Length: 264
Image (cartoon, rainbow, N blue to C red):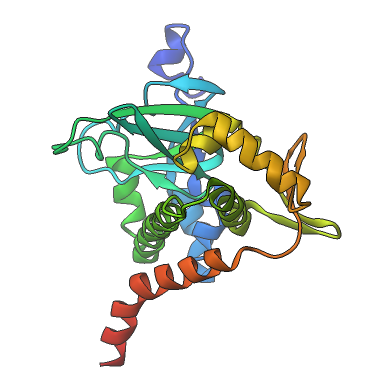
């Protein structure tokens, strides 16, 4: 008795597309489900898997067809750079973020350029139309993915508030502590942020020029507030008070209407 037939791509000598069980890869997403449904959902929610090596890319691939949700970053680090008239801003994307390349560029009123860079080798779950159909059987997953999209929007709003601070030195200090809120690891000598970010990337994140950022970092290091390590950055002391204020405003603006509605 013959075994199962190989896929067409394998018969032609090619490699079959990679897939993954997205709820196994992303336990936090699976935690949105009742325990009784997790095992079944983990087996059913199989989606295409995309691997992006380090380096520049024109953009992560768009979803095939229509009806998909987007791309879910399983691990790694990506940098999205947007520019208008030679001035640039940026956004870091990592584990748990949902993105939809091409969507932001549709029907834009201003002409801008977008560039992508994979800072750390990344694996991405492709939540295409088939994946959306599988995930739709579990409504809790839809709510969890929407919450992640809102969290990305909130983080970006905080970053925009940071770049409006008048001093680049303060912007950098606020930014590093903002990144520590997501990626930081508390140790005896401070909070480590294991992100290898070049001065150029930091410059885009705080809307400044690279030489200015280099000088501002030197001041922070001289003050003992920041130290540069092989794996990233070490933050000492406490976060700037301005960052705490910005975060509080962001939370109020994002959650306030929903809480008020619930109270009514």
